[in-house]
Length: 195
Image (cartoon, one colour):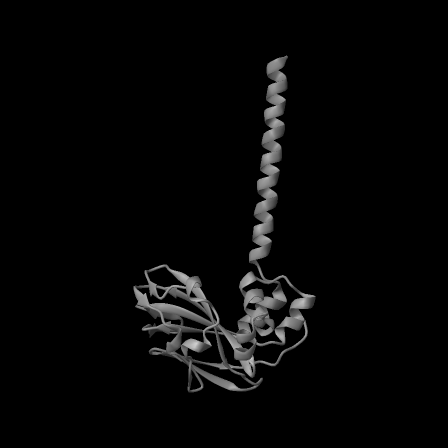
């Protein structure tokens, strides 16, 4: 009789433990996903640069040192965040630069926009955000919004990270030329639309 009670307790404990793992896994998966509206907004504001990459065919990049996804986050996106906050934390964190409690950050953001540089090394890569130029404007160390302790510059294959920089404000409809080392791409700045 006693072993039967222990068996039922063990089964109950295992069921509760499994339910907790299942719930926490679903919560983490929900946090990692963007809503469909946010996915579209971010997609039209992002351009990919392949550092030292060679284009082979239409969609194949060979021998790239690194991949750099540059995303434009304008201050107007904070209004959308109030109605739809199902977006990854990096978006929320970087939109907060517009309303920082730090006086020096607010001063740096006057008349400027945030560009988020999500990078991934394919080979050894000395990543330096000041290698980015936006319509001829070169990013300076003073433009880097992410503290040094939160990103690496000497990367090994597979290393990833993110750096936010402030650049002169961009206007909807404007075509922006982005350059990073030998890579270049253009981004047509979209108009903000309600979701």
